[in-house]
Image (cartoon, rainbow, N blue to C red; front, side):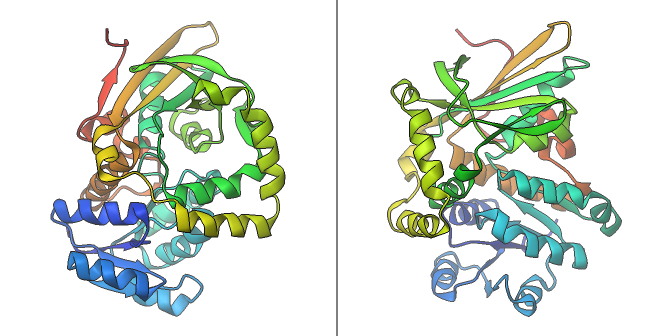
Length: 354
């Protein structure tokens, strides 16, 4: 496995820098990349890694950056803007593509190239961090234990802090409203509606349906036709959330307001600090049910989401470079339901402890 033969695009972002640090810790020497030399060069100097400048709107620049590369890891969100040109180039030159998106349109685009990726002998694998490894693997785990499952619910708690890239993606997604999958189809669902109580390893949380990548990926990983994805919210937010989301949907429908909000995010949002990454925990719940009401629940207790993403991303890259899976795949499709347990600090429960 060539530990210096992959490119980290978006290395100047919050998550990109965490992945670079984890890669160095594991003995990798990825080539750092981004569109701004003023932002990439200081990171390269600090880490001792090589770097290239690649403007995704300039095909010659991108082709030069990908020369001799075996795999691209894309950490530059929103991925709906950055993924397509890199995927196109990876398919043309036979280069593995990975990213950490949770954006449904990106997953849909990935899966549309399954046959071509197989022909080229490469893998296209989005969501190799907290989006979506834990939920993808747990979805696969519970549905494998409920043959013929017709319903799948997934929820997570513990996303206490978010990075600038994650927040900017959320700003772009809010105007489109929510989604659920019913009878195999994605249908609209009002954001802020449908709250329910779910027990997690750290106690009971109120969760609300959200637009999450597993609405697309779990459909491919499990074949289940009805999927709802949830996120836990503090109880004090629940009564105000529907009205607040309604206001945000109207505001962020304006591209001008979106751009202004994203500039403010860049200036003010920093992501969790080192102490939070080392101390915080996150939790995932999954429930599969068949037409007769037979069900299976399971839970994950995992490290803080951005720490998890850094560790999981590098591990996934290692497995891809070693095993060379082919096609458009989710992590669970490529490596199985137990893959998440390979991430240090992760525990899975069939019944809640205590």
